[in-house]
Length: 240
Image (cartoon, rainbow, N blue to C red; front, side, top):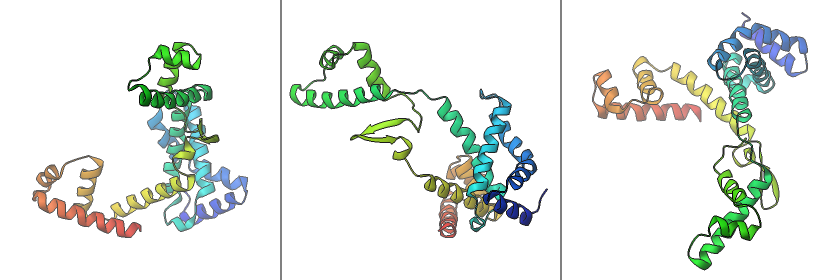
């Protein structure tokens, strides 16, 4: 396994277009990529495709990694690889809703608001179909489209602007910041003493109540509450 200094050197070379450096990094980290994709086997994606997706995520990690992050490159790469695979599974398996259907749904919703204001009741499917000059089935499909899971990259309409769902959520920079915060948090938790680490893991990873934790540690619930608040404040101050 390559030491950290060599890895950082290879990453820097790869970021400047050195294809050989990229190849070496992928080959040396192939066991890591394979260990990550194991959890996604039997999810409807071929193993070779999973590996290719893992490599794509790994290449994104190479592109975006900075030594200033203060974490090992492999630590940074893991969530990037997982994210690439999950992104593919989410978007590839989603139900695509056409722009026309979504547009009709928006028009129907606006019309229903006006109709209710004037008539104090909701219009029937038949009335909606007649008003928009479409089949009743199209009305039902349009109204149900808002409940369908869509790709984050599917287009939506908002006051004439061409936007995607992703545009309405958060930027890539924010996602990267969140990933880095999570990585830093995991490193900080590892440095906690055994009692504090156990409290955090039981509380937030195993979803245990303060009472359950108190019994396991043979202390009072009040003590658990105080310790938990103190630990969280300490972690928060080190992240900021």
